[in-house]
Length: 207
Image (cartoon, rainbow, N blue to C red; front, side, top):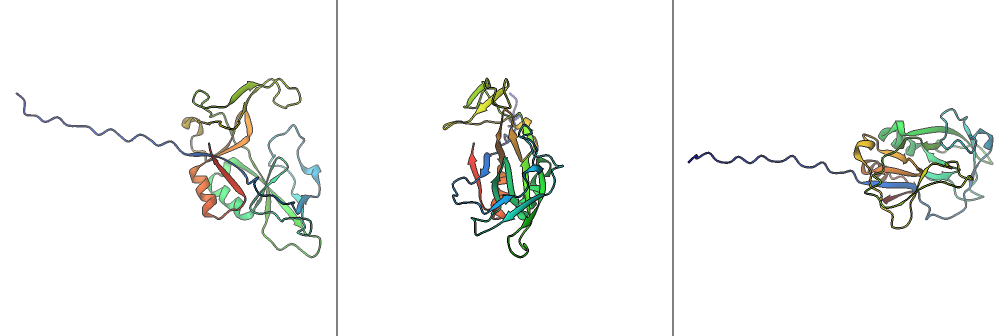
C-alpha cells in the first residue's frame, strides 16, 4: 500500500463581477433652473444623438433671481451641465468615455467669478447586455417618429433587471447602453469616486 498522502490543489478564487449602476441626474430635486443657453444654434441637429467634440463654446447665463444655479451635474438638453470638479473626476476615471464642451458663463450684473462649467456627454456606447440573463422589454421599433425606426430597442420598466457581459465592458468604467442610449451605466469605482469627491445631484441606481 502506498503511504503517499493525497495533495489537495486549491482552486483559484472566482473573479467577482463588478457591481453596476444606472447613473443620471437626481430627478428627485425640484425647483426652477436659473441658467440657460443663450445661443442654441451651437447645438447639433436633433438627429445627432451624441454631442460632437467640435461643438462651439457654449454661452450660458446664470441668474439666481430666476431660479436655482447649477450644482455639480444637471440635465441640460439631451446632455449634462457639469462643474469643473465633476469634469476632473470623470476625466481621471475614464477620459475616453466623455466629450466636454467649455461654457462661457455670463451673469446679468457684474462678472462671473465662480467655477468653470461644461456641457458633457457620455459618448461610449457598448452592446454589452446579456439579454438571456436580463429582464426587460426587447423589440423592433416600428414607429417612424423615432430615430431608431426599424432597429432593435430596449425598454426598461419597473422590475427590470440588467445583467452585463464583463468581457464586453472590458476596462470601461462608464458607458451608454446600445439599443437604449438614454441609460448610462457605471461601475462601483466610478460611483465611489463621485461620492468621495462630494459631487451633488447625481443619482445611482443598482441595475
